[in-house]
Length: 226
Ligand code: FES
Image (cartoon, rainbow, N blue to C red; front, side, top):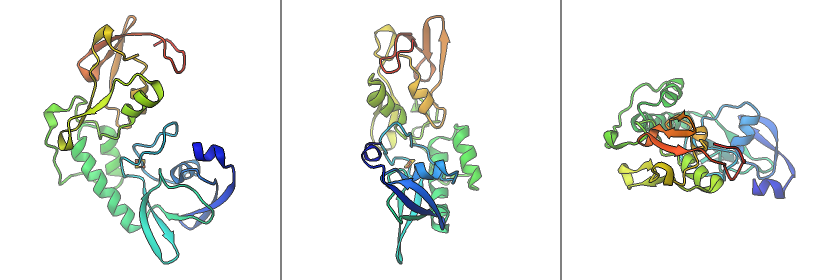
């Protein structure tokens, strides 16, 4: 976004052999989405700075006789930039990532149907921490909820806890003393629908983290009352 504001220079990029207009510095995934070109992605959110966490949006960047695989959500448009979104190597990589996500989030219908779209219905991997996942085995650790809560809302109540294969997304909030606004920004950015809430009177129930009740109040960003 920053780069885009500074530069409104028009450029032409090439995707799968066809030319498309773009603004210098905008991310190639954004160009592809605008042009209706399919690149699967799970951790891209236009209002947040590119992060490159899910590795699903990989494309092949071509330059003369060389090519390299890069995440399209972090690749900036420049004049003449050429990418391929569906080469055999890219498709192989995509299927491998989806297989890993099937193991990481076996209860997510989003992951299951995305994987099936690429012919992946089984996984050779397994997740060690099934019973300890507070998000019901639907979370792929993309970090969008953590970032939106910290960087945009400023509440900072969601974070990664533990390390390595034991990493999960969790929260220390509890009841009325929580800094959680119940704004549901985390719910709306979660690509796998792992975070679940419900309402009861003027309370919001964060069902994903132990049915914690949060008093609704005003969001400092949008001013709406949650
Ligand atoms: Fe690019 Fe996740 S959308 S790495």
